[in-house]
Amino acid sequence: MNPITVLLAEDHRIVREGLLVLLKLESDINVIGQAENGRQAVTLVGTLGPDVVVMDIAMPLLNGLEATRQILHTAPATKVLILSAHSDDAYVEKVMALGAAGYLIKQTASHILAAAIREVSAGRPFFSPSIAKRLYHHQRQAKAMGDLPMNGTPQLTSREMEVLQLIAEGKANKETADELNISIKTVEKHRQKVMEKLNIHDTASLTRYAISAGIIESSVQVTIL
Image (cartoon, rainbow, N blue to C red; front, side):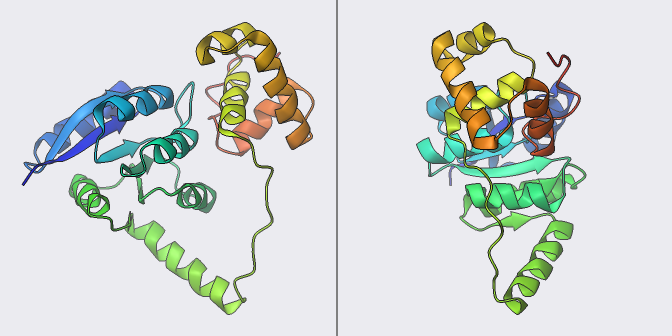
């Protein structure tokens, strides 16, 4: 039986190396690549075709949420397993809506990580025990309330999400254009569209929105113009 192929997407090198050491102990799991940001993860999935991506959420250039959306759009057979320090319901709901196969918090024991990889590879969802309990509780509440829908939020396209993150990280239009390989004029159009959809009209407010929405961490932003 072939081993499960895994791509690690984590911007902190020491965490990636720790995960690699843990997974090397598993004879049926083979780490075939590592990515230090979401954009690199998307590219590597296209070239390596891993069975499972272990994905952090807060990463530079392209966050794990948007990377997950792009990966599942272009490589639907690949399973995405979120491994994040964030465990609040908002993050869990977002990745579930995107189609992630599971969600683990970083405090999860190593044997649970390996088990989670095996489960999602087999097409079964897997969540950290604390998250699984909360999901079960929320499902029961929703059923009791008649499955009332949640209020919608403005829907940004994949490209608009990329531009928003780079703006929030303090990138100038030229830097954003170079990173996305598009023209400055196109960046400006996307920027204007983002502001219109979110009804936000200055960079500082866009940055605060990106932080509150989990698109970037507050520590990522170093300059607000």
